[in-house]
Image 1: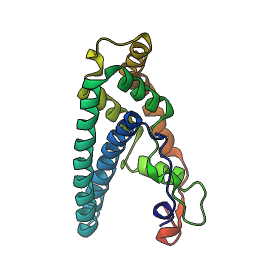
Image 2: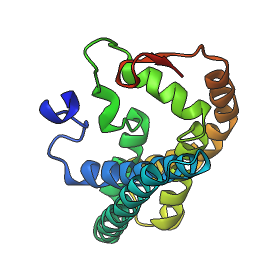
Image 3: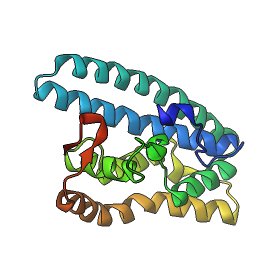
Image 4: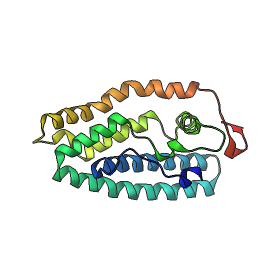
Length: 192
């Protein structure tokens, strides 16, 4: 409720290029995390939760499709500024809107939630890297031509990013596995 009640800044300002990059990435991440939650719920016998999360995942997939198509068109119309925006958003790192979630007790709630999500496979550093790879391929970033020197530098950064991330992802996943369990207020202080 706190997250819904207080609007948040996703870091795109009024820039439609940044906004489109952000939403394309964020909707894919939401699709993955809700889909994985649905699978886990089903494995643990909670059919209703699995259905709800599955419906949300399918909605997120539709949103992803719309936003990535908008971005694809923008890459056709203005490849230079779009690739610069893509690199800019990746340097900032995409934060999910829930990074501001708060339960009235834990000021690091999202960080704790992200640790558990990684530990149980709902959303991991691997997923983040795979989204980068997917978007680079979908938008044919490697094949962009007619770029300025700044555009070529951004293109190079984005095209090499997944490779750099791959070296770090195993460490990030292993680190999440080693983190201590954490109590969450919304499940009556249960430690997860």
